[in-house]
Image 1 (tube, rainbow, N blue to C red):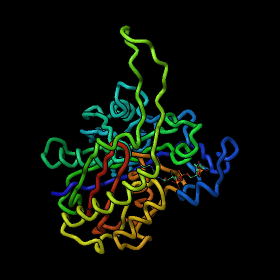
Image 2: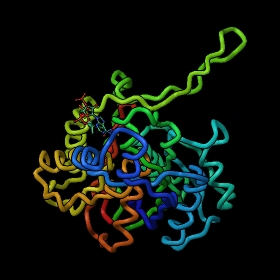
Image 3: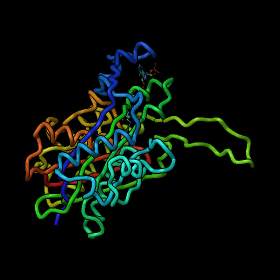
Length: 321
Ligand code: COA
């Protein structure tokens, strides 16, 4: 039995911020951002929350799958921007949608978070521990951006994407590959709340994302193609057999470089980053939902997915739709 995605959903904040909007509040331009990244706009939260968007994406995925919250017995949210340190975002989603039978928890693997969560859910389903899983990637990255750091804040956006997974005799996950390199953690980092116990001087330092863009770029264009190739081979396929590469949406130049290294046509790499920017763990499920709702995904198609980012972490999957 394969682990199959039977429904997808997504939710983006209402407010769209274009590159021109940003150029009115910081020293940047549409020309600089779009030529270096492919990003033209992003959605940023006002009142929306990570859990609220997650719950809405989950409702849409359940609706698409034709199931109810009562059917869900596992909820995993990949996020680095949960609204609370506790409870977890997944527990908030459980309460919001009324999935009373579910076990719910978050995982932190940054931009690979959705893919790591997908693999965990896949493993649970394969062992028979749970039957129907909701896997979500969700972020409100705008709250951890340093809006004075133009080289980083222009890249990211907010949003959530969700899938429903079930065992199926047809299709599903064919292979997985994941990895981490904690030694390089400093190239993409964000400090959490600092120690303020009575033994130390209280520090008011707030954590913002710090990124060595060129180092992250080098990591992505070497690690992602290698991981995708390993996964495709483990699935018993070749790169030519893959119908779509649904990759983490960080930068169009990274997607082009990966396509080149894989010797795959660029039109097999769907793009949402022009409209959404980089939404970390939410990127892949939002992209998948767009592809699903456009009718691009047909039964039997082979889809390669890959996430990569902070940790450093990466994870790829090949599945038959
Ligand atoms: N607008 C205008 N100018 C900007 C700018 C902005 N938003 N951000 C940086 N600049 C300037 C820099 O100050 C620098 O100016 P200088 O030459 O006068 O010092 C110049 O542009 C070049 O900066 P640099 O950082 O070398 O640009 P780059 O070509 O490496 O592009 C990234 C920067 C971030 C677009 C690129 O490194 C990248 O995409 N990296 C991957 C990041 C990523 O995807 N992270 C998430 C992974 S999950």
